Image 1 (cartoon, rainbow, N blue to C red):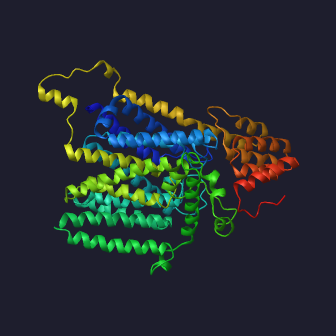
Image 2: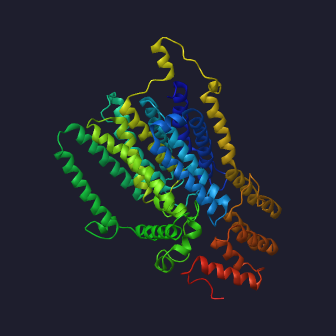
Image 3: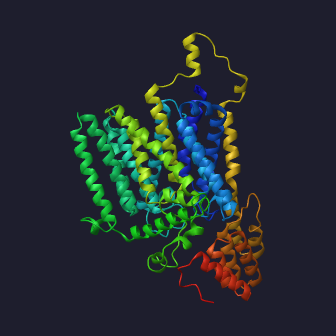
Amino acid sequence: MINKELESTLARLLAIGVPAVSLFILTDSVSDPVNLTKFLILGAVGAGTLAVVITKAANDIWKNHKAWCILIALFVTFSVISSVKSASPFVQNLYGVYGRNTGLLTYIFLAAIAMGASSLRSRSSLDRLFLGLIATGVVNVAYCAWVIAFGDFISWYNPYKNILGLFGNPNFIGAFLGIWISSTIGYMLTRRLPLYQWLTLVVIMLIALFEVYKSHAVQGVVVTAAGLVVVAFYLIRNYTKGIWATATYTLAISILGALSILGALQKGPLASIIYKESVSLRGVYWNAGIKTGSDNPFFGAGMDAYGDWYRQSRSEYGATVLPGPSTVTNSAHNVVLDIFSYGGYPLLISYLGILILGAATIISNLKRTRSYDPLFVGLSVAWVGYQLQSIISINQIGLAVWGWVLTGALISYERILKKGELPTLESKSKAGGTKSKQPQTNVFSAPLIAGVGVVAGLIIATPPISSDMSWTSAVKSRSAASVENALVPSYLNPSSSERYLIAVRTFESSKLFNLAHKYALVGVRFNPENFGAWLELYSISSSTEAEKEEALRNMRRLDPFNAEIPAK
């Protein structure tokens, strides 16, 4: 049984920390203002939560959620095995590739946050967590509104020319706003609020809907519509009796959904309205993810290693027609397929088990009652929205953290619903008229343990951003010596294929041919599975004929359908 102090600590840590992951960015001093910074905060929140769960709540979670604990343990175990067995560098598996940072540590932190959420034992804690989601949305709506009205005050590169939110990408902000709009409406409906609060909510929602439109992200529209459909389903169940109304509504929506899916696949009456070329692109990316996982069925290619395998896994059509030989990606644009490519069938099955457990809690509640519970509706609509966007999008940290914490929150909700809010140790003492004796092991309070965990998480998650800061500073200095110093690997400066590629190009264009050759060789030794590393070795002027021949052999191995690779 967890006590009041522990409950309060976990609730505060998640309600503040998870929004911070989504909101925090850093510009100017780093080349990646989004993913590195979110990974840093995720490390702090994840490690802080893990420290509290392991020392204070592990027995309680295991006692009440054995299947959940086993699935999380299997997922983390298979992630570690995949990282160790990967042909890609372990440091890349650990921190993830540049621009994604969805490696082993990220998934350990996400799993820890989900475990922490599942240990919450009161509705007020879950309400606090959902209010954190609402606050995250309000900040993004306000920021996007400012950008639309006055221009962007954040100095970052925006090739999309659309609103980015604090996620750095119009697709991500569109998807998040879709999740936020629908789940917030679900959470607020049936509540007795003053008229001015309802008017404020309506105005904010209209602004958010306009921002979804301005993001030009189809997934934003899809997620918003799907979420509102689910909210309507809960309302119909609440205000009708029997099964006819809900069955008719469900059938109508299912038919419309099926036609929409067919339309996205260029079939059916909605094809001309819904289909976009990006759907075909995703088909190529999905097929490459399936092939990568199938070719590595037991251990996968490694955490965040999809990009190293994309060229050799893509179809001949993908390499020659659409998107063509030069267009590559480091994500399957489908979270489930990313997971499959990372760890093969074991990791895929454990991840699907986690998703099924989350879905089962929703189904269980639907069977239990027809009444409209705003908290449950908000949590479940947000969870469904995240899972929907994860089918067609990249696993961005600022979004992924909500998918994992909501899964844990739904498991916690089901526990609360079955047994009611659990009495704390303090309340038991009062009821019995005696003081509870604190065991010796409680000399370290939950807030202290959380604080230590947060600091440890920052230390663990600092290397990628520290390395990027050093690299950005070195590039700005235009000094060859500084660039070389920034390439020396250390704990706070983990190696990166992306950095080696940039260094080789920079030295070659500056006519520092010996340095270009030196780091081209370092790059292929660091990651022989990186096509770009071999391409640079082949392209630079100082490579020997033997090195060029070796580079060509590896380029053909890694990209067998690429007709642009020279014959000699």
